Length: 366
Image (cartoon, rainbow, N blue to C red; front, side, top):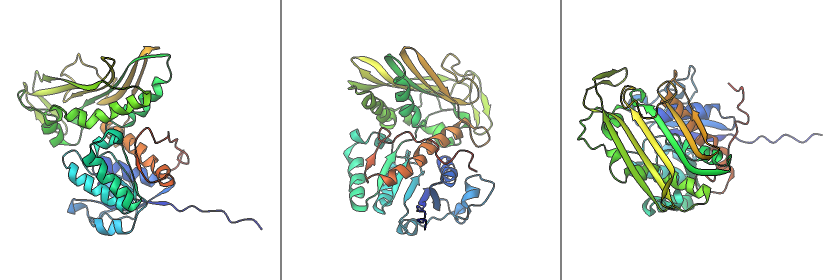
């Protein structure tokens, strides 16, 4: 007699949130050969009862109706949760949600808690509740994904190993924000269309470091170097003419039309690890700043050294949107880590812990 084949159970996975990131997360979970979409959590009452396939922009139903009943979903003790709800304007609520899922025993992956991208140096008020939830429930947490995660950790580290000399690592996000489907964030957090004396919250002192500083520290840890400090620089440009956008309306001449800022990881007194954002509301503003090869955005890694290495990545999804493409690749990294995390010991993980995850079992899969 032949032994019966062992059939491993699919990992029941919840997607929490159905915005820009959540839509991509539903599609990624549905496509993963080892994951089963168990539930979709929503906040908007208009989405309750709608099929996950429709919410994700798929052309078919998935047989999972969205719900707002968090307690019932977590009581079912899912194997994993993709926490795709926003954390930038509701960090305390996001932390509480993530900890609740971990206490329910789930592996949680999320882009929402920026300081936990580098958990080694995360503030105690964030790190300690997560560690307590892990001890209580046996779940895990891996946070990554902003701009788009891999572009500021695994890709630059991979490229740095291809040369014999590395002087500076520069990671760039270059985007036209008129294509970004978050009007409040674009106009008020980033300040596009506001008077030039308006102070955008995203550029306030220490805020860029709070969001992206963990990635600078991750690269430094990956390279085995000590940072002297992290410095912030920023520049803003006004629109020379009034412009109209397809998705966000009119932006008046004289208001903010472009932002450029850097986080500089200082090593030996020099900026050696740089994360840079170049953001416009229209291509006509600040044309002397770096631009994408074409379209509305790109991510670029530049290794200054010997040899000089420059890699530009253009991702698109949802009808050609570069912003949606960036979200989808960030989500792909997170969702692709779930089965590894489920097999690993419970704990608090970062991008240096998670190995490269090839698309095993996904090639040609519909």
